[in-house]
Image: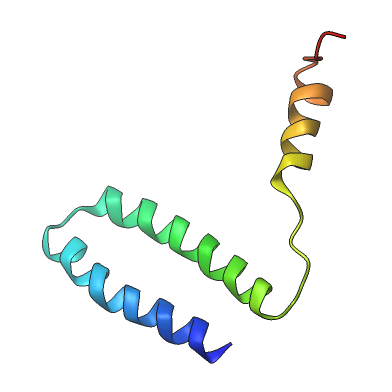
Length: 72
């Protein structure tokens, strides 16, 4: 678990100063969102908490909400 924190802190120290120095604010926003998602998933995995499959959500979106069905 501590290794996860150290790896993410190290990656943040390497990448973040360059983005801020170049003043790429949109890239910083996108990076932050993806970074937080990856960090949360890594911590959940390290704690042995089951992570739901994204395919179930996509299947629900495609078949139930959009009404698209596979031909049989």
